[in-house]
Length: 576
Image (cartoon, rainbow, N blue to C red; front, side):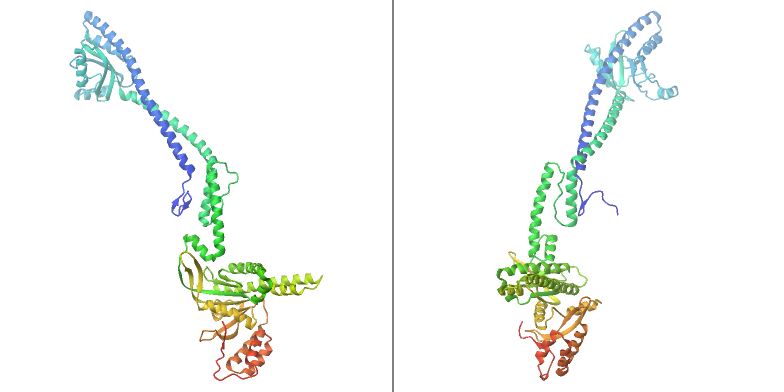
């Protein structure tokens, strides 16, 4: 496919303004020069005609004088042909152009002689005699009756000389004439107009070529000058084109730019671009990334939504009420430090922030391009727990540094315990409503569905089972079906959340590359199967052996008793 020499916005080519200016400049320059040359040519043509008339008048005087002398000779010798031939020879001496003529004819148009600068070749004489001859040495009659009539009319009025225009087979002639009484003839000296025009046209062509070469030189100089003058325009256009291609506003580099109006326009654009980017930055902080991208692409936000298959991650800070009571307004600073790291991990793993509600955050996966949304969510969950653990480690290290010099006061101990934040993460997925709700005056992007509530319930279960991350069977199935072996899923329990009639299996996703203790969880799962079957004695034995905190939940739940009648193995949650 042939590449366009011009940059394009969509299907429209961007024509450089320097090229337009050059085309206009060259066109006007050529038009001006050719117009001047044309006018000068016409004026010169008139001058040439006037000059030729002056020359022809002088030549006509010589012919007229020679005719008078030859008439005197004729009266003595009686040799008419010799006298006419002598007059003709005299007339030929002043010819300049190929078709110059001198002719004499009477009032009836009968030609006395006709002298031409280029007489017809001998081989054409017979044909010329058969046809009506043009005005040449073989002609016998002046063929332009209209011109002859005008001359006769002038003669009757007493005008014996003047200018004449007449037509021949070769074209239009112009010249001068004078009536000779002795010969009773009009003596005419004339030039073919096309001959004088030809020389003038040749001159016009030469001058035009000179103009073209001069303009070409100016064009080269103009290109160099325009390129230098409009370099800033080209640079600005290139920057704008790059913004168009990337669909992202930025500022135009104005370093080394001249202080002209184009630079002022670019500076104004930079100011506008900075304002828009600031507003866009603010918008990005209050809306999810996919909403921002769609708004930037479509230039609007509509109240709309649809059913989509997504994954929801719900994270909450444990013991938040205690921390708020202890830290007061400083809790905001702690939350900002925490969320700065958490939100970055969500975005790094192709997630968007659905909402932030105090100490809880809802992240959504699957709204953007992703190979496996469940894997992205689970990877983010473990990274969130790790950065939170790193923050706790820093607090522990800071306490150790302080205690090297003194013990913590009671107030400092409370603050220390308050800043040791810990989180739980619940993840679930499925079909939910995702879109914008509200009104044209105020709207928000939200996700609605049972699976959203389920993610929140799973996060709540992390406090009960003392596990950092709990996921649903949806997450387990999507990751295992993709053949991903990094995570191994251990069943934790089957629970029935408040308001639901069916139980739901929950899982702990162990990161096998970073965590150990698979044997303990295998024992735990063995105990869990005995628990499901109602063999609580075996379950108690295995739960005690596995050394996992979650096992304590079951030991307290079954106590020392036996499974009730109609035991289903499902634990019903009494709270949300």
